[in-house]
Image 1: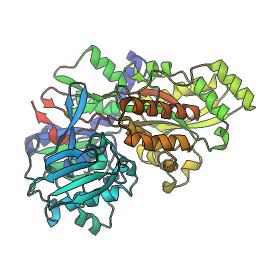
Image 2: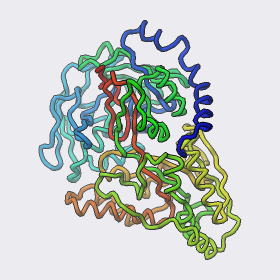
Image 3: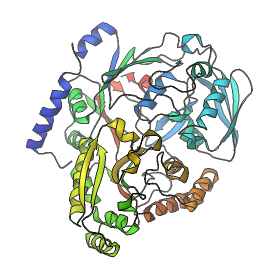
Image 4: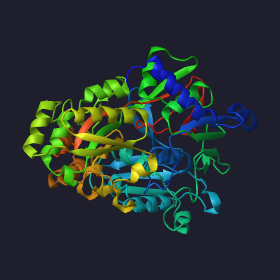
Length: 516
């Protein structure tokens, strides 16, 4: 967004207020009075697939953290993150480079009469993950050896030191109930077949997800009796709901982050989870209009990213040079192209292309639309017409997936942001050859990239690992399929009376919130 002006701020406030005013019939104050300690939060959309093997991620991971067992969880130490065992385990440790032993806590019960949490549930869960859409997280896992009802060993097929941080702490590390999942047909969507965590889960589509204290949970009590996560798709509406006292915590958009940084509202604190987001504009290398490398390179040279950072993000985010985020091994300070409209025109002329018209798809969010409009103006300056197609989250996240329909065939340009974890390996997995038609929507393949990906899994030398991830990003530059944009901080405004806990990639962990 551009720096705030009175006219546009007034417009956004009025429009968002209309949307926010009807969110909570009867008022949230009444809910609190009637129902004990209630935490009111925001969802940016409905949770559509809670199954860790087939989820989109984001708030679905937040739901898993409240209702399913994990072996490990993130803990913050200043500006860095490490891990600790969760309340579901009493022991989790490496015994050598390829063996991690665990012992589950006794007496933790699955809902629905499905018995206690067992090591066999861990083995079942991770075996099914190796055959899921999130299988890349488990490339380093050979098997889970069950050594007792509550004990087992994770056996890695090669040394991979970040396994606990990358896999076990994140959403794919969720453990499901074998009996309940099989009874549900082996997969599930909008309901957990069984829970074993601090909260139970229910949802009203388009309105809210509700997390109630689980009466069968014998672990540490959560800080709040009830968490109500309201579906508020527009971040501006969520900010207004927060400022009106209707919700207790919300993600801040870049414009409000800049405003809050200058003048903090009374009783408000800001928590920044991390900068582990990477945003880019992608190009479908197989689309007839974009098959010529010179055309894609022309687009790379035509986009003024600095103007996007100033105009759409109010200068609150770091400029991106690839998929590896600031502070991680392999993060770059430059990339393989520059803003050069004259060179863009030359490349288009060399390709014999004129009068090109493209469609740019984006989530229907304010900063994404502003980004798209700046790109539209940049490309118009070199003779490329761009039609912007705003989309809601459901169809947007399916548009490049072959199993979801034929939209992938029509994809030309899109604005995408992924979140990652505190290791460069995780970001690279989405762009290997086997991800074409799944998450590699740019649809290119590279034997060198695939080989480096495998090397990065087992390399333990820090300098060698860094060179691997730098080279992988160079290969991505060379495809011409990416315009790197930014690394947004995942920042939350919340009441000073609440201690907020978030993963480095931004997912909130509701049961670890505490009243201050």
